[in-house]
Length: 334
Image 1: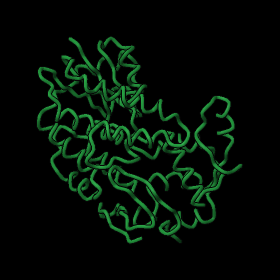
Image 2 (image 1 turned 60 degrees about the horizontal axis):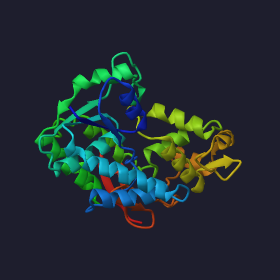
Image 3 (image 1 turned 90 degrees about the vertical axis):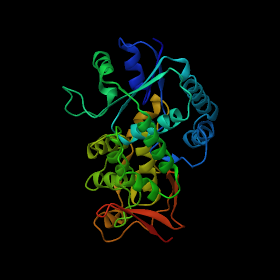
Image 4 (image 1 turned 180 degrees about the vertical axis):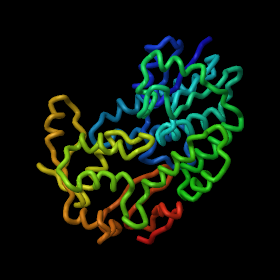
């Protein structure tokens, strides 16, 4: 049987290749919990937008573009396989990847190709389960019998969810979480974590920003230490080092944190830079401390210009904020 395996990144992909599981492996490398996903665009058009966003000012645009092009062409070849198996876990990153992939399959003519899903939130013997990238080849292979057929109903739910995630009004996505999500049993909790990356109505900080500031409240920390410790705040790990360092840079630019020696830079591109990168020390500023204890909020202090799915948040315009107590989105005026 000719099989295509699609999974959440290179780590899991390499484990599948090392296991007894046969077939081709396609890693889905896009960190979809941040950056633009505007509505109304097909896969290739979205890939061009993601290419520009992820390449940023430092990476080779051609290399990033090639990666997306190869990924998309491999996905389009899925109907040439007898079987497609998706390997994912419960966190926000993976759940968003599942939505995008299943949305594509909902419109594809698969013919006799079967579509199956493996998605877990724990593994026997691993107390602090963070993801399938923790497994060895034998453990990974044991999951193969856990795969389940992706039904027409599941494809329909995923299609609705993907459209809601890309809508410029996040109320659509919040309403989506109140639906019966069927076999996508981890999706609601993951999406509620997504809303916590909106500015909090009380503090003006996202959950990740507040967590990083709490870690630097009482002592100087290096950026790698902050990245590792921030993972302990998450029940389902999804945020990577690139996003964490970008958040630290944002907090420094907003004068809520300070870096010695400054300015803060990230991330290291060579082995030689890594030690220098770790020699940076980050502390809260007095302004950051006042926000953290509730004397001030970050609205009017930080200058946001970011995307969460299809929603573009800009501080100088009316923008959405998240009320965690009411689990509601509130529109704030600029």
